[in-house]
Length: 208
Image (cartoon, rainbow, N blue to C red):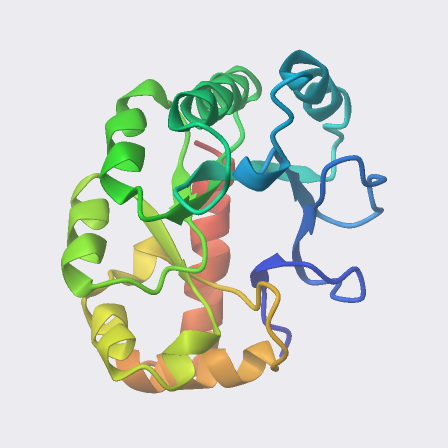
């Protein structure tokens, strides 16, 4: 059985969504495209948005990763402006948003009302209370390697509805099948059921 990798950085992975980096060539596989907070060029924002819009092809599944990050040296107001531009683009082309967020979850939640498309927090590994607030606001959560060893995050998986769940490798070195196996045990369902549900979730966010 193949296991869908919701967010990854390796072109050798064929079954998933490849995260296209800024100024990278569009690959012949499913991908997402966005302007990460760390890639924002304050002197060339409109050019960056133009690059983004002009590289959306049939293989583009989502806008992202994009979002807000307190650890990058870009002013919060500029990050918010670039994020909002990408939200508006996703609304126009009707594609979901893959969100990168570092210590800005409640700011991200405040932007939700601007979006008509699904918003997915990738690489979620924060407290259960944050997950609960995101889920209440109709976000999807994508989990990665930390689920394999983080007991608190395993509890968060337990309270995350199956229809709001994705799994990913991101930049980490591990086999995604191991993550599927762990989550299937935590959720008390078969690997087949879990895999089918994630594919159903993909259809849901793709079709708005």
